Image 1 (cartoon, rainbow, N blue to C red):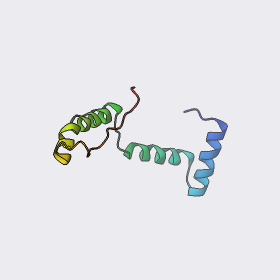
Image 2 (cartoon, helix red, strand yellow; image 1 turned 90 degrees about the vertical axis):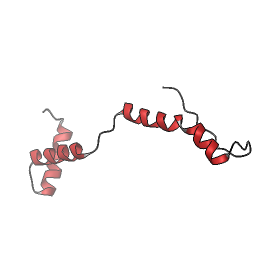
Image 3 (tube, rainbow, N blue to C red; image 1 turned 180 degrees about the horizontal axis):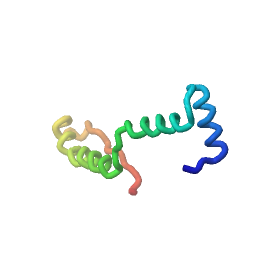
Length: 79
């Protein structure tokens, strides 16, 4: 892996504080990143679409068709 001088300096400084090596710091960073859950855009869009699809039924159930009561849907930009 090629690092810029600034990246190498940052990692070396962090390693010095931790009393370890640059490689150990990098392994820790990679381990931390790998432990984070990955949620794909498509999964998020699918979940939000499912929620939005249920909106009319939920609104009717909550407000019984009363025109004075309701929740305005949030409009988003396409894309």
